[in-house]
Amino acid sequence: MQDNTTRFFVIGQSYEGPSGHDKTVFSFTVDHRQPGALCNTLAVFKQHNINITKIDSRPSHQHHWHYIFILEVEGHIEDEPLKKAFAELNDYCIDINIIGSYPRSEEI
Image (cartoon, helix red, strand yellow):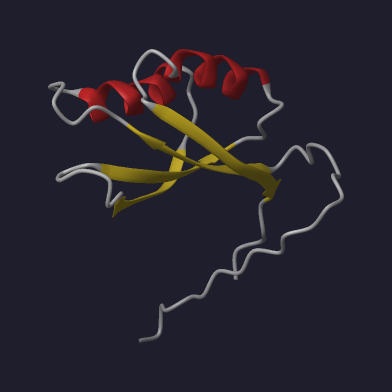
């Protein structure tokens, strides 16, 4: 597996602020009974020209067919486009949990 990579996060108590080349990770849930709920949520990022770099889903274990989605997007939580996007997400998401923003690493 030549293209295999491992990702590590360093979690700390200090805050450096935006670097200008950041990514933000957050999780959210949608009402799976609403047609297009996930599509509507993801469209918010397109409307604000925010690139989604990774998406994962995990069962929530709260209800059948209820999933937690984890997204990584380009930008810092303090960037204006992300602030506006997160304000709009409240219209589509049951809950949102911002995990954090961090500087992007260099491509290996």
